[in-house]
Amino acid sequence: MSLTEAILSGDSRAMARAMTLIENETSSAREILKALFHRTGRALVVGITGSPGSGKSTLVDSLTQEYRSQGKKVGIIAVDPTSPFSGGAIMADRVRMSRHYNDEGVFIRSMATRGHLGGLARTTEKMIAVLDGGGYEIILVETVGVGQDEVEIVRVADVCLVVLVPGMGDDMQAFKAGIMEIGDIFVINKADQPLVEKVQRELETALSMAARRDGWTPAIVRTIATQGQGFRGLVQQVDLFNQFRRGSLDWGARRRQIAEDNLRELLKERLLEKAIQQNGVWDKLQAASVAVTERKIDPYSAIDAIIEGL
Image (cartoon, rainbow, N blue to C red; front, side):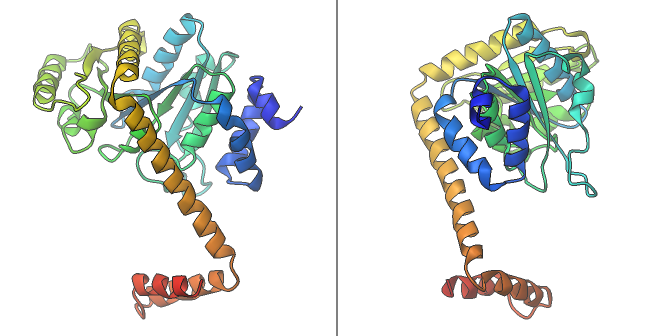
């Protein structure tokens, strides 16, 4: 049985092996993704973003428990900051989701950002494809947790949850550019703490002043992740939004735009790869990096010179 066939049969070891090949950007990764493509697009991808300390990982754990009680297979991708020493994920979310570790219906993968911005790793979308092809019906993607620049999640998720916590200033953080726009559902976690009413009122006010183009009014759901409270209602809201977006006139246009964006990214990767493989280009790049460091040439002129020689 080939690695792709093993993935399609739901073999977790095969999926882990493929993910490692993809994360390391090996030559075989592209062939795996090509073979999987026609068996993807069936999973519901839920993005979870929010500030550090908002309880995202505990929320993912409780959300997984709710979906498992419905008999659904759940894949989890937890994106964490990169270790400056090993290059791996610092936080290792498996520890916080230990009750699912031996559950054959749950697959957990921690990823390092490796310097990639936007709250995700560069290969996160490809990891989602592996889980999708492996038959996981729900895929939860937890972003790195760095604040208002985590807007890349909208490219990979069908539903985006923004997690807030009373008393941490998250109410103001959510109103900054980008975060309000990406939230399909706002989750006030640790809702047993003081100031929860204040956070909800301010969110409701902000949402009333920012009507979405698709006509959806984001729901506000209260949860206490450590106690598993509020997750049946959260799953219901996720289902409601999923039904809404599928019936929306913007859905087809959004899918085409995402496909175009993905093709652009792939084109950039392949063109860069092809350019560097040409004779002398790598040496020119190294020489240019020294010249730029010494301020002998600006980076724009340096790249212009390299491109002219292609």
